Length: 183
Image 1 (cartoon, helix red, strand yellow):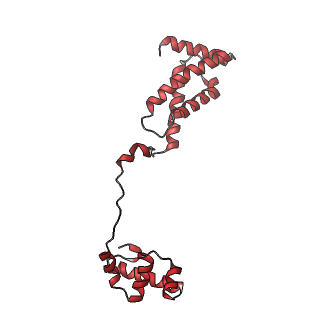
Image 2: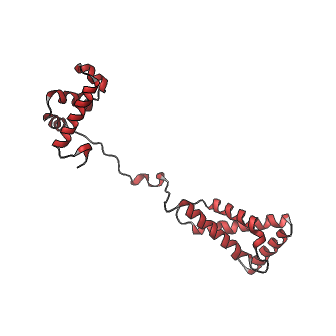
């Protein structure tokens, strides 16, 4: 901006403070473009919408226009308000960086399907007593519900749950896992 622009903005703001609505509209229109450029240059990473900062800056200028010293340049005053509003926006956002998932989707690895061979399953079930082996196999391998398993073996649902829990705990212990799968 040149000195001529500074003088024109100062003249428009003085006229606006005196009550000239047309001058005020012109002033706001001109500084909106200046603030927008300033804010866009300062926002390097996402997470802060430049238009939100522009609108907050314009609102603050409107509310605080009476605080501008008419013997001082107007641009430093405007940029100071814009800088404070930008800082406020970054503080609200916090330290997190927001990235659109679509921008990085191609960098994600394809999920690997975990396969367990029948040999691994049989190895895990081998150490269990026959009744526990049948219950664990029905629920964990075949995918039957507790109720279906109870009906299949003619035992209560509580007995199925107890047998399943004990069988899974025995398998976990056998393969070096502590309680609930933690070592």
